[in-house]
Length: 79
Length: 494
Image (cartoon, rainbow over all chains, first blue to last red; front, top):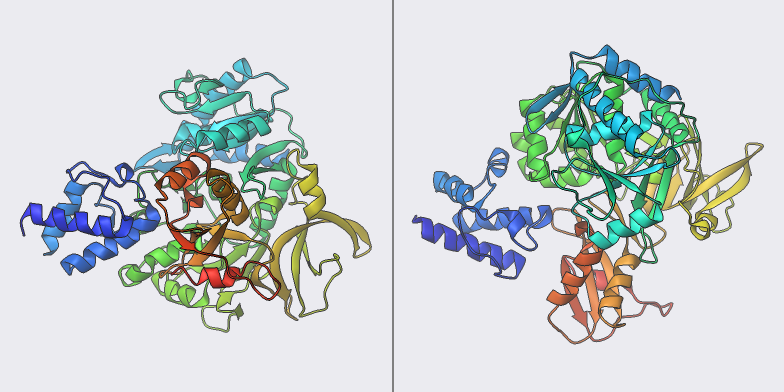
C-alpha cells in the first residue's frame, strides 16, 4: 500500500474518533500536537486503525507509535 | 522524626545500588544523595525559615524527587504543581497554600512571576543527609483535590500521618528489599505516588518511572518485561487498557501487584493473575485524607474472593486505622447494614487546609470503644460482612474516579455553567466499552457548537476533568423525587 493511502486512512480514523480535522498529516506529527488525542482516545484510535487495515498491533508496537512516521512504518510491516 | 532518619540511613546504606531509572538512565543512591545535598543548600540559602509550604513542579527527573527529600530533611512540606495543569488552577493552589517559593527542575521557570529555585542549577557540594529537627506535627505535603464549589481543596499530611502509614504498610508484609525493582506510575500530584517512591527508597530498591510523553499502559508492560519489575502499585484502569493484550504478557518476576484508586473487578483480576503467575495481588483502598491507603485485601488465587457487583472487597482496615459504617446521623449501622464508611487513626489528616466549613462537614468525633475518636466521612457507601471485610457499594455523592483521580462532578458543572451563561448542565460519569470511566456532559439546550465551551473548560480544569462527550436534551428528565434523573441521562452515553 502506498504511503499516501496509508496516511489518508489514518487521517480518516483520527477524524472519526476525534470528530475534528484540525491537524496536518506529516511524519513528525505526535499525539501532543492533536487536540483530544490523549491516553483515553489513543486506545480507540489504535483500535480503529487496526480495523481499517485489518491488522493487530502487539502491545510492544504501541510504544513505537511515537509519531506519524513511525506509525506508518509499523503499519507497513503488518500489511 | 524517625521516618526522615530512616530515609537518611537507607540512602547511606545503599550508595552503590540504583535508586532511580528515568527513561533508561540510572541514578545510584549516591547520585541521589549528592543532588539532595545540593538542593538542601539552595533551600537553606534562599528560603526563609518560617516558609513551610514549598511549591514543586512535578517533572519526571532526579531533581524533582531529590527536592522532595531535601524539603523533608529541612522540615518543609511540598505542594505538587503539575506543569500541564491550567495556570488558573495552579495559581489558586499557590495562593491557597501560601506558597512563596517554587522548586523547579525545568530549564526555564514554569512560573516566571514567583520566586523560583531552578534545582538543575544547584552546585555540587559535600553530601549532607543529616535531617533538621522535624516533629510528627510538621507537614510533609499538601495535595489538592477536586472541590464541589469550583475551588480545589487542600489535604495536608503530617510526618506523623506518613509514619503511621509506612508502619501499617510494612505490617502487610508485601516485602521490598534492596534487590527489588519497583514501579512508580503516578503523577506526583496524586498521593499514590508517595508510597511508590517512599517504600522503595526506605529499602534501597530501584524506582522505575514513566516518561511523560509515553503511553502509560504499554510503557508499564515494557518496564515489567524488560526490567523484570518485582513490585507494582497501579490503578485498575491500567488493567482495562492492557486486557486485550493479556495473552502477550508473562512476567514471572513480579512479586507484588497492588491496586488502588478505583473499583477492582474480580474477573479482570483473575485474568491478570495468569500474566503474573508468581505475584501476590492485593486490593488496597483509602482516600488522600487518610494518607495514601488504609484498608487491604489479599486476592486468593485458588479460592473464593468476596465481591459486590463483581467488584473485589477492599478488605480490612490496616494496623493504624479504625473503620466504622454509619447512617446519616453518625450512628453505627448494624452488622451487614449499608452506610457511609468512616475512618479514624493516626493516618488521618489534621483537616482540610484553611477550610473550616468543609472540615465541619466531613470530620466528626464520637465515642468509639470507650474513647472520644475523630472520624472522617469518606463519602463511600459500604457494608461490612461478618468476617470484617468491607465491600464497596458506590458513592453517596456525585464524585467520580477518572483514572484514579477524584472528580467532583459538581465542579465540572459549576465551570460549565459559568462558561455557558447559566445554561442547565449535568456532568455524568459513565463506563466506556473497556470498562473505564469517562465524563459526559448533558446540556439542556438546542444543539450548538461546543468547541468554545471545551476551550474555556481546558483553561480551568485539568485534562482528566474535561468531558469526552457532550449531549443535548430539550429538558432534563426528572425522577420520582422531582430531581434530575441522572440515571436516565447516564444512558445517553456509551
